[in-house]
Length: 112
Length: 112
Image 1 (cartoon, chains in turn purple, yellow):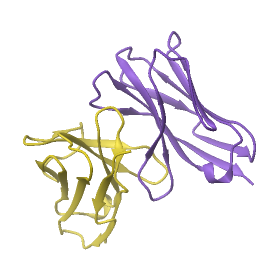
Image 2 (image 1 turned 180 degrees about the vertical axis):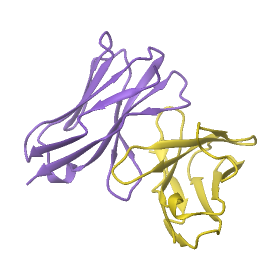
Image 3 (image 1 turned 180 degrees about the horizontal axis):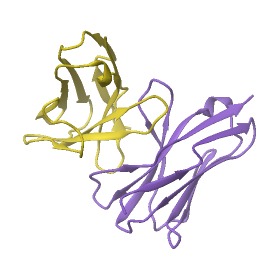
Image 4 (image 1 turned 90 degrees about the vertical axis):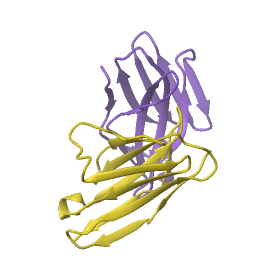
């Protein structure tokens, strides 16, 4: 019940295309859903986050879509660029924070 | 966003020696910090929760006597890998924050 399931494990997208990464959770106590981006040899960094009272959040080329009834959320990267090539982690945490549960990660490669 | 630093960024040591890794929150106070281990091309594995002024909470399967954690102040947590062996070689990352996790840049440990 504490898991966050992430797919796909890896993704190859042409430059200019749309990258889509999906996550699913079971614990309805989760209240905060961030996405992190990690480049090789670096720590993860917050990319964008959403709360369950909102169905979509957009920041530049990055959009989170949230389906509360299905307990699923996804990251869309529009106009994907080679510089977006990284590992992306979805995550979930309960109200008030404390332990964040991470998905297994998706390695994205954007072909020039 | 908030900044977390780690020191050292990489370390090479001989088998049997101990290695200390520092994690500092530079612009916020962290009563709780988290330590992760990450193997190549894998997800973040939570090792332990570091609590300021009290004992750390270790995840199942993590040896508390091998991975000593000290959180003596609101801005500093340390992880000491005692009697390190080659299998302890990994990328260690810390984070702090309530909902959003702010990650350090990571420490790469190589035990020869």
